[in-house]
Image (tube, rainbow, N blue to C red):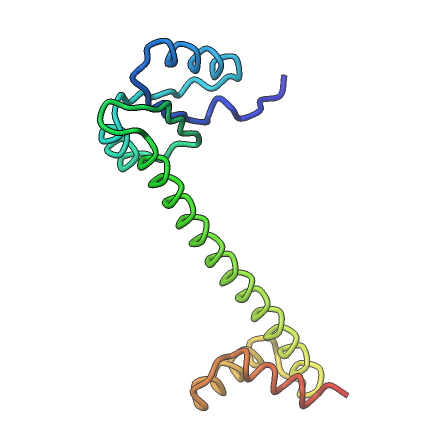
Length: 149
């Protein structure tokens, strides 16, 4: 039988209701999610969330120390920030991949037109970038323009 991975997911239930804890726990158990933590207040939930990240957070308002809206907004803002950080990281990785592709194409041009080895072409691009105080990509783009007909 194939595993869905649900048993690795974690849930934080923030509620003052024993009935809600029971109801949510049963539902998650039926979905094979067994890592369940319960907090009775927003402040307790905030402390728990500082220690561990949860896949699912349920805020069953009102809570003992607040209505629950502030906690939900805080969690949503945190998730939004993390998502933005991941998007930025993803964009940087895509840029690096594109840089590598361009540099590799330039190396191939140097190998073809100047009969350099792969190591020599790599060193040539690196040295030009250092000497001209620019990036390897800029040098590679220049090489591609020079040899592309």
